[in-house]
Amino acid sequence: MKTHQIALIPGDGIGRDMTAAAWQVLQRAAGAFGFALDGIEFPWSCAFYKETGAMMPADGIETLRGFDAILLGAVGWPAEVPDSVSLHGLLLPIRKNFVQYANIRPHRQLPGVHGPLKASTFDILCIRENTEGEYSGAGGRIHQGTPDEVAVETSIFTRKGVERILRFAFEQARTRRGKLASVTKSNAQKHSMVFWDDITRELARNYPDVEVTSYHIDAMAARMVMAPETLDVVVASNLFGDILTDLGAAIQGGLGFAASANINPERNAPSMFEPVHGSAPDIAHLGIANPIATVWSGAMMLEHLGERDAAKAVMAAIEATTASGVGTVPGKDRTDAITAALLAAI
Ligand code: IPM
Ligand code: MN
Image 1 (cartoon, protein in one colour):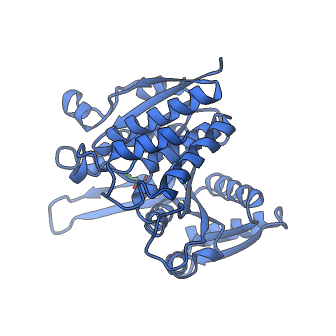
Image 2: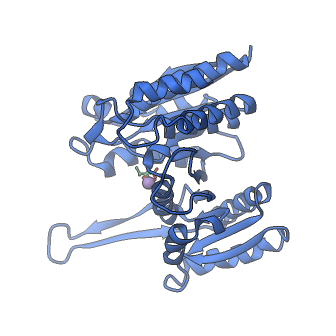
């Protein structure tokens, strides 16, 4: 039997509850479709940091490298470890070290879910650059704590990095409705963002079948609310993509539905699958968080592993569950009840 080796990193807060729920659903799908998911759990988290002084062991990245995929819950427990420490100690190094440069985030409204918009027919695929840009971490602070204090944080955009994410987005558009929206802020940021627009135009020549439009991030934010049905694939830099995908989650009906895949398209290192939401300390372990975002991320993982039919079945189970009214309203159904409905639907 085909066996996929999965590294499970539940992380913090609701991440732990959500990976536990999603893992049950994925195991059910594996059983139904005749393959095995062999999961090894790593306790890397803020609790691990409190014990050891690091978010993961020094050889953590090398340990993960041998896996076929990583399923991650959420990272962050700001009451005990500053987010800037926990995220730069676990989530962000995984994305960067494994060159998971394409962060894919689908935004559409599931059946039975009523989001805040009147129109609910949108189907957007956000592609977020995931290894450089505003998240490069280049910079520093000098004269700390004095009136002369200075903080510098430099965005880094490389031709290699921008070309590969745009090419990836063009390819995605090709497999969908053939429309690509490239998002920058080149009216204000005259170096990096004009560079991005230039490369968009250069690559567009190789994709005459894709209709590409450049938007400024502010206009895109408005469009995602006012006319989301006009969008197909949306590609943006790391920070812009981060912000737009929380907006995408909001128009879907909430963060409980927003899935994401951190993809290494060259497949020379594992890809990582995680919900868009965070650890939600306020509702951690209350049993009321919605596992759908993590389960959907798990479906994306199955797809990536080549288990297409199982991925489709998990998506169908999510849709059947929400269509029946379960898991559609934040806080209405308990995690267990939603998980049970998903399991029954596989
Ligand atoms: C996300 C999250 C992360 C990000 C945080 C936790 C660093 O918001 O995956 O969208 O900004 O990438
Ligand atoms: Mn985010």
